[in-house]
Image: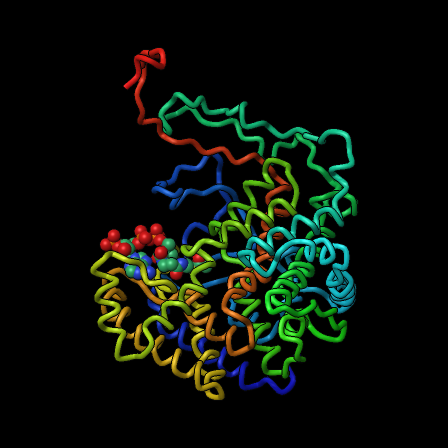
Length: 465
Ligand code: ACO
């Protein structure tokens, strides 16, 4: 694995060493034990701190800057694995044996061909659409290729409790001794055993493979159509990362380019209960299906506070124009209480490990790209000044989106496609988490505190002011 790309492995190993050195003094992780439901925890606005479920998929330790997938740290996965292996790991819980990997790879190769979906997609003005909108539409069309749900009569609701049957009466305060009756792990409730067995099952693992592979074909087709070109067929001899670049740019990537895209895909594959993962899980919890779930993940990822920040970073760096302009620009932005795209994170209060890898990769690629060198010099100056001003004070550092755009653009990805490329990678995390959650599904249904009025008199329209 990774022939002729030792330089990239060295960059990753160096990032791992720096992370280890800088965060070894931070406390060991808490909150990694099985939960006794119902759980007591402090919840902030935006469900900050709330625990919605247990998972064995991934772990983020914000103060140490750790990112772990299924027990493996992100640096090891980037140095020694591939996106295909990581997707399998996230979905199935262990790295594949060579036999399992062969079967899995064959499926990814097959599912990369989306002729019917692309034919349907070409019927729409994709070139004028928001790229995440086009991606989401493509996923809906993939759904029609694969799910048979629409043709079935009714839905099989199984034994899952509905949202109207909340176990905590809504009129009670959200604390006290009235606890929910949780169906999780109830031996009397048989779980569906069809997840891995029935190819027609719209939540099955086969649909996850279809999405992990196929969303990259849609992203590539959207890129091509926006350039007035026709989509390119995948090359069965290339890796997932290699195919993504090939189908987007029309050029076979060099081993170094393929490897860097592969690392970028691994870094973005999963990240705890972030907004898009949560959105995907909420939709799945209603027993909708995995295509609708992934479509919701795409919609949530689009926002500038989430995955959309990578494109915003590039626009910001272009607007700043030169490193000498950073000071004034930053002053103005912070005085207006503006947020600087690519900085800050709900969970990380240390340097984001993904930015630790992407920053040096951007530097590596910029060596041969003068435009990227200029953009990178602005980014470096902005990082320096932001960290001086807000690093120790508010624990604000670059996040995954800060350097990813520079990496993508050096690989030939247009800026409008940065967030779709993020989505291509995150499909692995979305599907794995949805798949895991459904084994003990309970429909998501938090509540809001009513602070409105009561007992208002309903006046006829001519008496209202
Ligand atoms: N620039 C300037 N100040 C910031 C930034 C930033 N990027 N991020 C946070 N802060 C400040 C806030 O103004 C706030 O200051 P205050 O306490 O004086 O009011 C404090 O830090 C806490 O910020 P919150 O917005 O409350 O943090 P929250 O956890 O709600 O938001 C978020 C996290 C949305 C990522 C935020 O940092 C942000 O908007 N960043 C810019 C957008 C971005 O890069 N998003 C991508 C995140 S990574 C991802 O989703 C893949």
